[in-house]
Image (tube, rainbow, N blue to C red; front, side, top):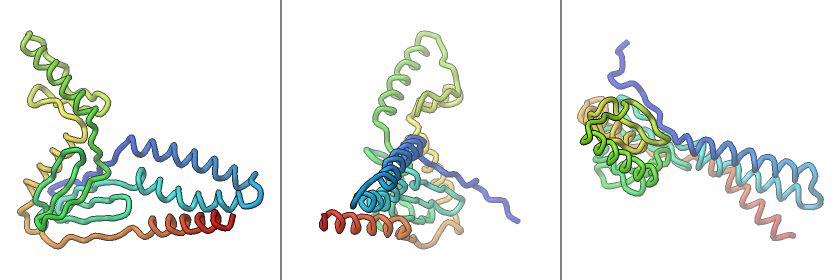
Amino acid sequence: MTTPLVKDRIYRSPQALIGGVLLLAIVGWLGIDALLRGHGHTPWLALAALILLVPLVVAFTLRPAVFAGEDRLRVRNPFRVITLPWGEIAALRSGYSNEVIVKSGAKYQLWAIPVSLRSRKKAARRQTRAESDARGGRTAAAGRVFGGLREPDGASGPLRAESDKIMDDLRQLLERRGEAESAQGGITVRWAYEVAAPAIVGAVLLVILLAIG
């Protein structure tokens, strides 16, 4: 068996995971309480709200992930899964959001790697402070992580926000694997009906219940 040249990597947002678990706990607690103690249409309204909200919370918090493998990048967004061979990717762009741009010109947002402007500002401040320390003859401690910021081992590069560092890693993978024969092929996009369908059912049921009073 041939050993993969690139070990598969999975990128997710820890903040989104924590927020999703907390939201599910709150929605579940309120919904179950209304189901058990509600009167009249209240239990049905609570049930419809649960069917609507739970898939949406999962879709936007727990579901997003980016899987970077030897031959392709798989992007799992709230309602779609996009599989992109490295050979079809033109660029990975970071601005107010992180995006992958394919050679056809289409763009796909990386929901699992959100941009934090606050982390970028913190990184810039720490970088300025480190440069000032270096000029004064002091060296910063290497290899530390500061709440969403990653400091490089040694003084070989600037301090970067964590999401920007991840995008740098993906760009290196693209540079190394973009021309590989096994990394060519077509782009596939699959809609996540298992997430969208329950939310639509819940929304329709909620509208009907509210309409009939």
